[in-house]
Length: 191
Length: 269
Image (tube, rainbow over all chains, first blue to last red; front, side, top):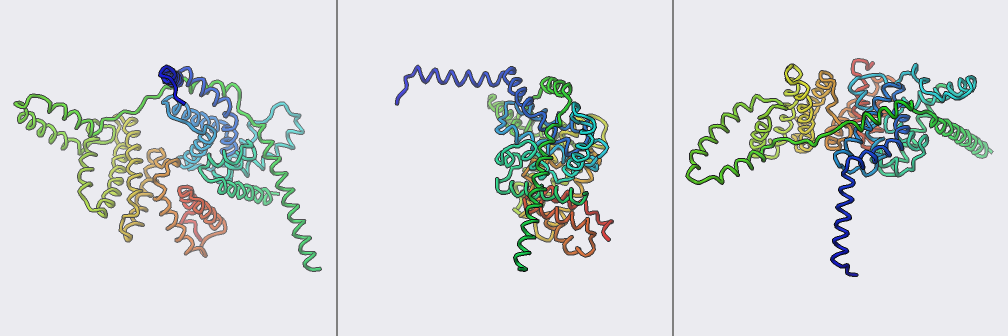
């Protein structure tokens, strides 16, 4: 089907308008804000369970979103924001330990972020239980921790986890399986 | 009967494992209750949106060439004088450029001069020269750490140059002579580790897959070496070796090298 010249012109103008809108500061801020609200809790959780330090988790989360903002503000395409953010966070964690040569486990800080509305006794029992799971999670290699966190804690579908890891879905399943196996073994050796 | 008991035992172990897994999954799911502080969340969002980034723009050799091209559009009568003047200025700039560091004005001229030299070499010589060039970039970075003037700006530029040279060197790895490969790679990796310690910056970007070949080669040779000395390793070190091999199998070479570095030679029994 042939379109008239006017139709073609309208479409070109529409695309130009869309492009202009997408490049506007207001659009970028709104887009970032939406992505931030959607992902900040998940990224923070992933980082916190890995580093077991509230301040450090905040710093790494902030750096991760700064990198996203940089991409958006420089008009770079972010195809899969969730995978992008988890991947950046994972790499920042690796970079942090490489630069500082620190021990990733800090058990004293494990209880710093808790559900504050719970009954104290119930919270104490749950804390003990959760403490062990979180300690084990923080000891997992970065890829295993990322895969287990995304799949079981954040309940992301396999293809999202695969994108964040940059692996095939088959390899991702293997990583999740190995991660869970290591977690179970660590918890068994404690119990 | 024996098989029947064995099967029963297997089934109960399987049920136990499944139950444990289900409990573990439930515990993991309940971790979702952990959330960052609300005030911090909104504060950081405002702070990030307030940041502005500029597109990188650098003066390259080609831009100099373009500028010279436009100069030659001047009347022919001035051409000989202009050419002589250009040769003199360019020659002086080239000599001066040899002592520059990343972040300095004439640094791109020094690089362009090096590129011209390398382009005239044979493939094997080129591979060695590009690995040596990476070595030079590391030495420049080392010099920057000793300087006090403009250190921040130069340090950032120096790290970028080192990263770029590492990508180039990594691509030349397969062309290096077999006898020199291990020595050159080990030398480079130990220098990176040293400079990362001095600058407190991470040279190796884990996201960059371009220098995977480098780390693949290093991880492979380290794993082989540890396997040959496996009887001297403690159980914890053997565990680390197994983890490194797992990372290697899933193509996570940088991670494999990091794990291998945790097997300190001085602690091997």
